[in-house]
Length: 542
Image (cartoon, rainbow, N blue to C red; front, top):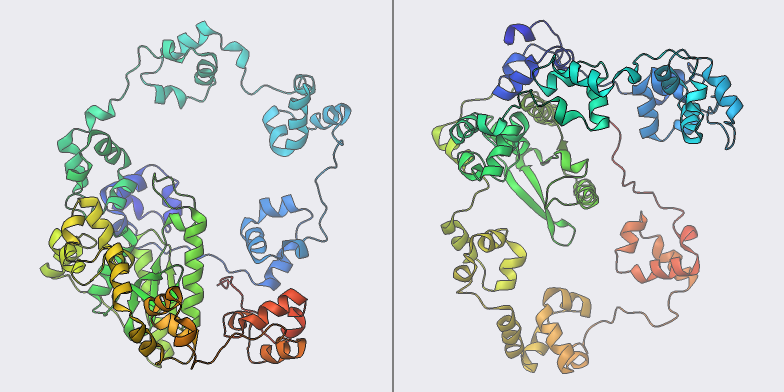
């Protein structure tokens, strides 16, 4: 296997020849077999290079076919229209393909497949209008479908021992059997591989032991994993595996441990939130670096039963990216799938941050200790004792539900009642709040604040009690009223307010948000924001 890999200088070339790559992936030999290979670097197209490349082609189709990389780069950068002004638009107007033009166009080709590939619009129109047979009457039939009668198909099928061998023959007989409903009859003598019989329980568990995570097992040996799920052996087969953490997160956790770099997992910053503060996979304090591992669910719709939709995931990713920039955190998103590539991305980022500080550092991995290996295997799992211990940190049920992931674990495992025995219920929390906040205590608490908004944010229960019981005006009599009277925000005052801010977002979220809303309502927004800079929410192209 490794000798086979040595004949190639890139993974892409090796994958195209034989099945050695698949076998190496299945048995976990991929990193060892490809250690000598040089990762293929994607070309980064500058605007000047795209302009030069576009000038080589006369049409969009020709550019897309002959130089896919540059065409894709131009599309992503949003400059495609600007670079293709000189090109001929090959799209024909509606009604162009009359019967005469279709037949005339077909005469330029010798086979149906050639016509469909090189002039798909004409071929499609011919099929849609029933002209296809007439237009292709002069063409050579590369596969004579008419020869595959039922008797001919049955006779041809006897030459093959299995359906897969027959379908790979590519002579048209298998397709004819499939189209005409003769497949079952023709394949009666063929052997069907009984994959369920091959994967006995002992073989499934033995196969699962080669892998450290469920994701790795499903990717490399999907059929064994599928049989395990179908037969109810999955939990037993994966008992030794790391749970919850994805393969990418496990790889990063293991790497940082081996490099002796201190880090926090699931780090949250109160300023970066959607409804609640959002977690980053890793936070490296010494580098002020947050790392996110983004699997395929961050780029494509997931097929998982309970998977979250793509729009929600990408929205949170964007909030994290923008929040990290505002807090001046170094940010790294890793989407690689191979262990070596993931490690290279993390090490490269750390080395680049160190070089910015004026010195270079070499990082070498050390072996994990038995204790570290045990910790790695238990990552993401919660025992009952751990859940009970975490629950004791919270005095009320709503507080625990809102702030701790162990709440869901307790529900799933049926520990909820036991965990919340010491807590006040949601009803008791509200009732106690009503009893505690007497009029004297409310007024005393309100005296600590200078405005209603600061009091409301600092102590919602006290503020709510004052409002519901009619004490609000008395309790806030000493406070500065931040709400401006109707008509206060004239155009001049709005523009004066806008000058305090450098961008629209900070103005909109400030205490002068009323000025922003008045400007938008009265059509003064563009004039008021002329001096401001735009905050782009799009990630910069590397």
